[in-house]
Image (cartoon, rainbow, N blue to C red; front, side):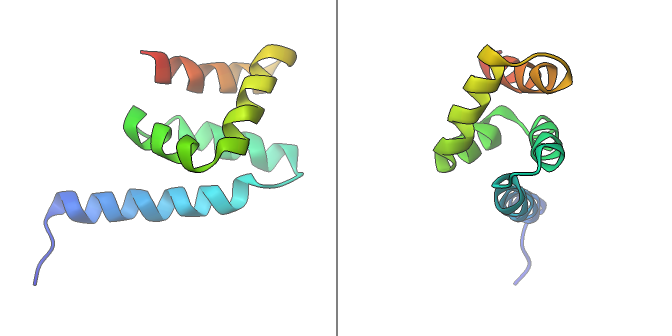
Length: 85
């Protein structure tokens, strides 16, 4: 049986988010930043689903938004702003 294009795209997004979910739990700040930056390319529903499954990441994003400066704050704020649109 053939899958629809929507099913294939949904499966691809799910697989990509699983990879990001594995990589984001790191002490490597640069890798963490790349994962957060990658999340900005997904639609709001996918990002929300990801953050609901990764509560620790959501908490870290709020901490970064409140306590950091520079590029990482800009990346995190961009992601959070996308969620609030």
